[in-house]
Length: 344
Image (tube, rainbow, N blue to C red; front, side, top):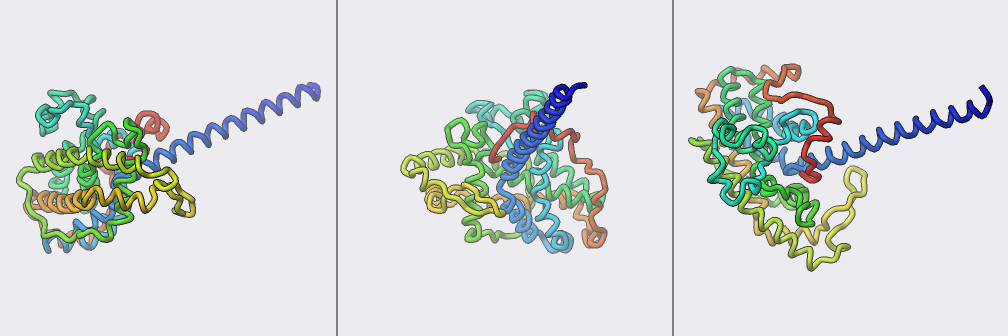
């Protein structure tokens, strides 16, 4: 083989090597971009805080157990977001696109899962989100875990249930226009549920009374979704109005986050928007804490109020299969199929 042929072969191999690495890098960047955006459900900080505060609303009989695992309940509050691209059936548990069902969505949609499946069809329901139905299912799973006195399941389901309940309280989790992408307001999702709480939640009044028993979880979670959807218009309208009077260089600023210079909504823009919302974010966050604590308590009562003190030292078995998780599949397959909510 002549020198020219050898040179051509080496050049071809080099090109294939470069192409392969560029492709892998591009896929990795795309994955990390979507993954990072997917972590913005209420923001990591807010989800952790909601679960943590819910613990202190529980009766003494439950606190003896829950307080010991407060850090676990808080730190793992973001697990459902981490699973969105790794587990089939996870993504749809976080939202419901009510506008898909028209103005009479609350009259059309059955409040219980089996009835909804019979009327709408499971594939269609999952495509447009199932959060109000899944909260009911998860609450039943938690009751079963209490009856079994299975510490690992109690904690895992409590963590996930807290996350889904909190997501149901976010207005933009109830619409197809979840990130303002249909109205030219891209990024509003993370702005509302991450940026605003991070800036202002330290001043929120988050101390609520003791947990109360919920006689009708289905009715209550649907009321949460209805209230969230009713707040959606103001979320979009006020941001749009404010954008019209702000220059781009005043609307956004750059901040150092995790040693990376990141473009974010400016503090001035955020303060004015937060003021226009008139306590909306605080109210939805307070309501989240209230309902998380209530549903944990209700599930325990429905299980016969088992003695949780006997479970204090049993610990969490991280190797135990999570029977509540859906079917895993490759990250690439999930990346291509999961609804890309850049700030959701």
